[in-house]
Structures are given as structure tokens and as C-alpha cells.
Amino acid sequence: MNEGSVPSPAVRVKRTVSVGGSLREGERTVPEESPVAFTYNRLAHAVMMATPADLEDFAIGFSLAEGIIETADEVRQLDIVTSDLGIELRMWIGEERISRYSERRRFLAGPTGCGLCGMESLSEVTRPAPSVKSGLHVSPETIAAAIAAMPPGQKLNHETRAVHAAAFWTPGHGIVALREDVGRHNALDKLAGMLARRSIAGADGMVLLTSRVSVEMVQKTAMLGASILVAVSAPTALAIRTAEACGMTLIAIARGQEFEIFAHPHRVFESEVRNVA
Image (cartoon, rainbow, N blue to C red):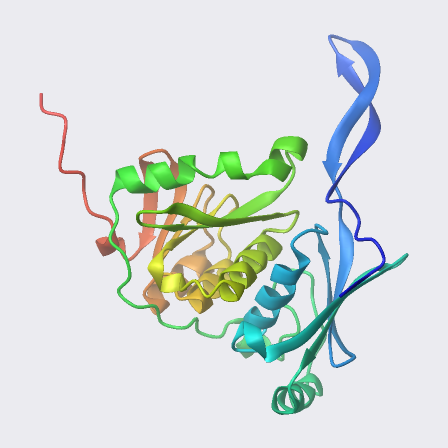
């Protein structure tokens, strides 16, 4: 159920641009950024700044990442409620789940806006990521083709040049899902929610990111069950250690067939055709 009008994910704004030393008036499309609140059975959990699009996916993906639910169908009802203050994703979950959540909520130190919301302690923030299975084996050509297939689906970024994307690629189908957001964590949560709602197994493909790879991006990908994570930017040291520990192949700084593998390179096999002098 939607109450009120959800803001457009992109808006036209006036701006003054300098061209060759001269100032000119005009307009530009920029992404919207809205406060999005997550509540469970009327209990407030966290507020994230996000692009107001694909909110159903965001609600499910965020709830899975936070460990509040284990499957998408555990959210029995989802209401998207808008006001002058922002957007509330009002979810209703079963009694057993809400009891566990209420107990956990008593110990929350407070949410953050960094993608690790509502964690209970430092040990919770640095918790081990779930172990991933053997998964896929791919070639450099496959990785290059997957990354090259992302831009056509980044419609909001084409308009604004200011949002991140997370995509899911599978053999024989290419990119089967892509989500965008001003926040890279949000984009990945939206992707996770979309996959869960469509019952697409994370182990069947690899996750692609247009952003840098921090530890929570590895943790969220591992929760999907994906064994390969590919990003166009660099990883952090903690992200590398986390990927190594959970068995994930971490590929970053991907530019065509040129990329760097930081953990578990065995899933990438060399091309059969090589240049011969």
C-alpha cells in the first residue's frame, strides 16, 4: 500500500555553468535524496538517506541484511507511507520474528548511516561473513562482458551522473537484475531485495558494483550466497580479509579484461587463446 506520492528519483534544477570563462544559465538533472525510515510492527529501526525508487526491494533487502528476516515472505505486509518529513517503509512481521527483534533492539547502540545499521557492538560490526560455496568459474572475457553490460541499465546514472549501481549476472542470461541509488550500500540492498522477491539464488551468479568495495559490501554479497564480487573501484584491506575468510573471489579495479583479483583467484581461469609472438 502506498499513502501519498513518492518523490521522483530525479529532478531538474537550475544551475549556472562556466564555459570558457563565460557564465551561462541552464538546467541539469540531479538525483533526489530522501530520508527513508524502516519500521517493524510500528517499532522504529533506522533511517537511511536513499534514492526514492525500488522501495519494496529496498525494504526486503535491508531487512535481510540486518538479519531481521531470513526470507522475503516473512514480511507479511509492507506499506510505503510518505510525508513532508520523508518516507516510511512500514513492515509487519510475525510474532516470533518481532519478539526476537524486540529483544535485540533493547541492546542497540544506535544506527549509523554507513551501511552497518543497528549493530550491537564492535564484534557485531566485524562479524564473519557467511561462507560461500564453490560457485562459478569465469574467464577474463566473461568478466569484461559483464562489466560492459552494466551501463545500458544505469538509466538514472545516465540522467544524473551521480548514483551507484549493483547488478547480478548469470551465465547464459547476462545481467538479470540491476538497481541504482545514491548510496552504494542501498543499491546492493535493493538488488538483494529484488533477487529475494524473485526467488533468484545468489549462488547462480556474480555481483557487480560500480563503487569501491568496503567490508559491508562483501558481507552483503556473502549473505546473497554469491561467490564472485566484481567492482570497478578498489577494495579496503578489511574487505579483502573478509572475502578471503568467507571463500569469496574478490575482483576489483575492473577495466575490461584488466582487473585485479584480491582473494580466491581459482574461480578465474585464463583465456585459451593467447597472443603468440
